[in-house]
Image (cartoon, rainbow, N blue to C red; front, side, top):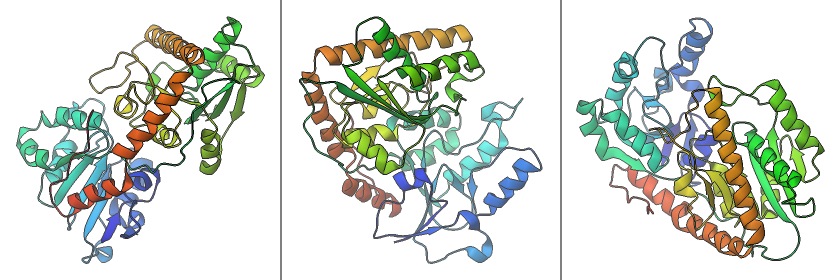
Amino acid sequence: MKIIVGGTGYPEKRNILTDGLHDYQDYRLRNVWTWANAVRQKLLRRNKLFIFRPFPFFSSDDADIIHLFNEVATGAGSWVATFETELPRVLPIRGIDKFTNPELSRELRHVSSPGCRGIIAISEATRQIQLQLLEHFPAERSAILPKLHVLHPPQPVLQERIAKTVGGPLTFTFVGNEFYRKGGAEVVLAFSQLLREGALSANDVRVNIVGDTSRTHNVGHGNFQDDATFRGSIEKALRETPVFQPFTSLANNAVLQLIRSTDVGLLPTWQDTYGFSVLEMQACACPVITTNIRALPEINPDEAGWMIRCPLNGSFELSVKSEEEKQRLRISMVEQLKRIIMDIMKNRAQLESKSAGSLRRIRAEHDPRLFQQRLNAVYRGEKMPEPARK
């Protein structure tokens, strides 16, 4: 099939550019809105619009389908969109209620039109958020619901190994370029406290930390960002505590090499729409400790890993409305993380079962061949077999 795509970034590689038999055509620079948005944002100081419409002289009549990520197509041709939160994606405007935003209503009409063959939520949590949106637009809802699907990203098995159950230190690995958003500070706090309390010694664990501490903004904290004093204490502990092995950044192959020799992965994240690193860790038979936001309960069930449970809002996310609330959440996350770490240290046999559980769920729920079969069915306008749900 000849498939037009709106870009070739990481989301497209994980969810769209997945079949070597297809001919993918990158139309990002041929999209009118790539250039119109540059003008809107830089000169007019207006929101970006997530719209795809190729210039007329770049239209391709022989393409079988257009497949977009987080965008809505407004031109000719049949199209499909994969999305991570809502479709259409419309940024808020100060002083205008979300559901009375005329741009949202306008773009929803394109989603409900016959030209849209399907919209693909990357998780059940995403599908539920989309259903909440559609409750406010009953006319469009009836047309959109039949073409709303859930399709988790594909992930091949990367390594099969036997989990370590006795003897020697355990290796934990945190991977998150946005160190603070992904929970890097909470990892440092948990292990530092366990060492100070005498619950762990420097001979018990090794902790790889892959993350850029200069990426200080945490979207999960909203208006209540950590101050320089807090960040300085975290970064000092990261430098001076002997169990930590910090890396500002690593190539993906190097990250996977670390994971292959890791016993437990770490993602106590404050905000994530999915959690692709969890799939890569599980595909290396490495179980993961995560929070319970968005898709993480779906991809990290008890048989495959461990869950830090936090109170969530209606969008399955953390909601930080004050400095005090942020601190309460942080304390809870760190304490739960500490308990899980110590439970693993005292009961190493669980590593083997959760390691095997990680591989089982990757094979069952992220098989690349089955993913492509389901996606091709959407391209053809056929009913897509739904992925197995727990």
